[in-house]
Length: 261
Picture 1 (cartoon, rainbow, N blue to C red):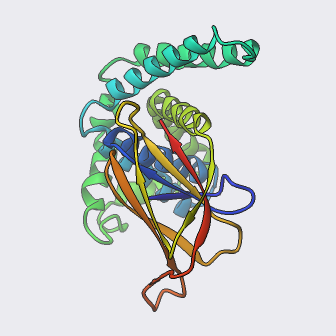
Picture 2: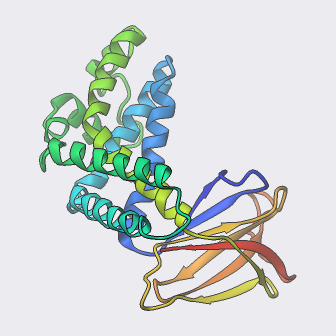
Picture 3: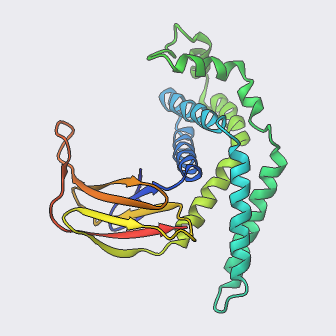
């Protein structure tokens, strides 16, 4: 489950309901982390940025993620096209969304099926990846060339890293847009977890992809979700501190639930 501060009144927790959405959320998280550290000049941030990049490469090595993103782009474009015939639709905004989806599809298609291969073949990145599996394995005595690169001026590191990011950007930008559309399509509904527990069954003819659970600001509760794409249960736990296990809430808990299809 991921927690995102997209709700100004309190935290929003997200739970993927299929493997595609799990992959998209992980890529979204890692890409955001990479972009955050990319802008910072210190060597520690550069290390963190490289780590995020390597994790993105690891995720995209499992299955054909590019194909999954292209399929979802096509699906969303079909959904947007259907909206054009509905009365009261903001056609200008809809056209802008469709144009952006078409651009993302064209860029990902142009990148080709082997667009990540250049990064996968990099001896420099592969050495860091190999040593990263060992605790402390990227110390300077293990990877002196990595240490030497980290000692370079920020302008040099930024140029190199920027070139690597250009490779993954078509995929990651498309994932960010798809997640935005998925979240926007859902409508929040007020719910109550009686005694801290809530059961939910999904419609079989309309597969759900993502749950969003919004809680009020300042709460000491957080949700734990278990289940599948057909049904799930949510229980709310009370946070105390890292030294104690969270306790099950026993009171009724009000929250906002969004089921995104």
